[in-house]
Amino acid sequence: MKKLMLALLGITLAGSAAAQMKPEDAIKYRQSAYSTMSWNMHRIKASIEGAYNKDDVIKAANVIQSLANSGMGSLYLPGTDKGKGWVETRVKPEFFAPANKDKVGKVAADFNREANEMAKIAAGGDAAAVKAQFDKLGGTCKGCHDDFKIKD
Image (cartoon, rainbow, N blue to C red; front, side, top):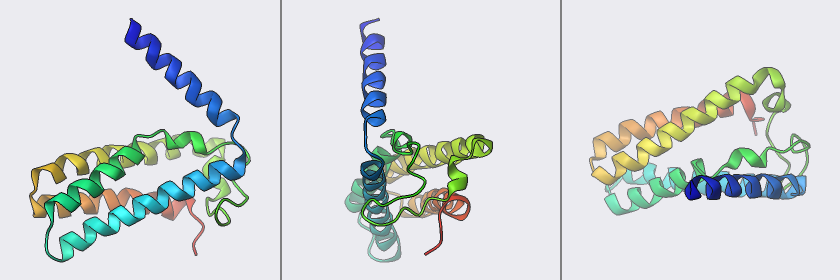
């Protein structure tokens, strides 16, 4: 019961912290997290395409997993569909449309599932399995980018 109460308190505090956040700060945090994820995806890709380094892949996969499970959804506050963090946001307004709520939820759940699986597979050290999972994980990124990211 004590653990449940602490978990509920944590969720409440995280929600109220996000609610008090300025939109431009939420955009900055989002952009920073996605840049970090991108860097770590590139680290895995470099290892797959070059000399495989199990330790580097594990580190990168763990960072991606941590960010995927960090509650980043709370950074998509009302008013963050436009504006500037480090740069202008590139999230499409459709991301925030009530009609897309289920689709956004599915994209997020797919990414979390594949990020968790990536960390698990990376720990095993099988380069071929890592490559196969990397492709699945990258597919979840692409799915979101195709539907909800403004192209550069």
